[in-house]
Image (cartoon, rainbow, N blue to C red):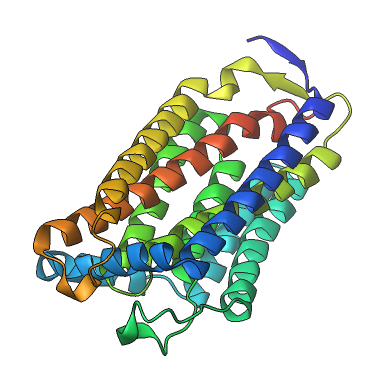
Length: 295
């Protein structure tokens, strides 16, 4: 197995860029979804479209969402920290815990700190106010990413795929249940992505000088598949919503079944694709942040 000393300078730059890009993407999602009429309309169409087939998925959706609570989050966080500790990685336990706590606290602060202007597009939910980012989606995504950080290299790729699938499912479930708009879930993934980069910087700072990376731990193929699959889903979302925008003069309540389905399915693809990309970016760098050889 080939190993080499970790190039910490380049990795640090990559993490800073990653944090800034995802923060900028969050701002873009926030501005478009909350502060433009077309953004609010797309969200409303997707949320209205969730009634199609709801009877068939209501039970599993409720089961997924109801499993998330403060108690379960604490239990999972402790478990993730324990995995890191039994591997002899104290800094990793701290970083993973910081990622989960930081992402979830940030989401709650943003949710109650941001405002959603009323453009008269969604009168049924006007009194709900802002719901971006999604708390449930943040819980699922932060746990999934933290788990990928602490897992041993042999099972890390598998954990990344399962974790991305779980977080994406949770994000779509909030839309299916009518709890959140699609932009809420995407914003939650970006919050987690920023905190993952910050946790990575902490791991880099605490890394020993002679820590070495094993090339076999890079999992490039899995990262490529997650990233490419995510981008394809985002492209599909863009195409679906581009077609939908031609009907923006019609209120969501007056749209026929087909455009509602396109809005819902396209948004669901965008949610899943966003998580795939975020997880791919984490997987690309994690072997440098948690090297097999600590030095």
